[in-house]
Length: 306
Image 1: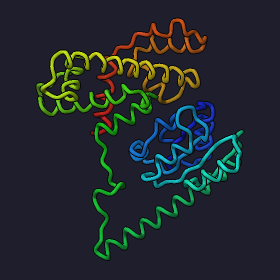
Image 2: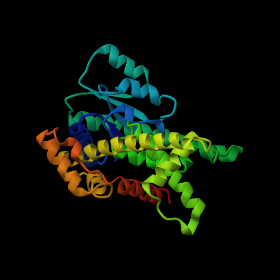
Image 3: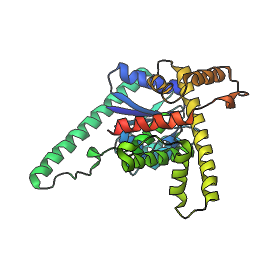
Image 4: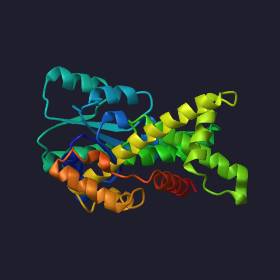
């Protein structure tokens, strides 16, 4: 069973992941610290069967997040909250929540509920399998474009990576997705003579795509500068996110995989010390190698697609 955890408290996310793994309830395929970082495309890409979601989160709460997923997510939803107001619980159930768990978390309660959820998911999957088999005999085979045969592309994979890096809510994340598309197109256009372009060429390319070939040079330059600033802010948030993961759990797989892949580890370590000491005075002194980050993002996305 594939679980996706949405909670702004890293300790809660870690506790839920530990229970799921220790009790062999399934795999945690993704985490997010706010509902604004999650959409149906990400859940489809992660092949999530069950969402564990907090009710109260700073940007988009659990209720609003479930509403936003209503038309696309077909799995099970378990709401987690310390709030026990009947009207909120009732609204959650009316929107499709299957179970409601109250904080503080109780391992026995969580294990019991998730076992029930797993049985429901397996039963529904079994029923769908029977229906698909019957469709083969009745001449109505499943469409090759159904979600179960969903094929990943570099934009979807890029969005997943950006979500893992904790910056999908930043405006610069959309610029990064455009950069991935631009680099992919350049790779296909140039073939064997392709070399990774300079940052100037990259930002000029996506600015031209956005404004059109008829845009004036001054407009292109203005958009290039604005785009670079948005990306830089997004990368800074990613650095904070990765450093926070390292502070919470130095063996966190995302921290181990991403801290040196996307950043210079010395900068990650510096940010960890700043966060640990709550020293905001030097928080803007981090030096992020933008080209390294973009190159790493593109290479990681390509590997996942291929």
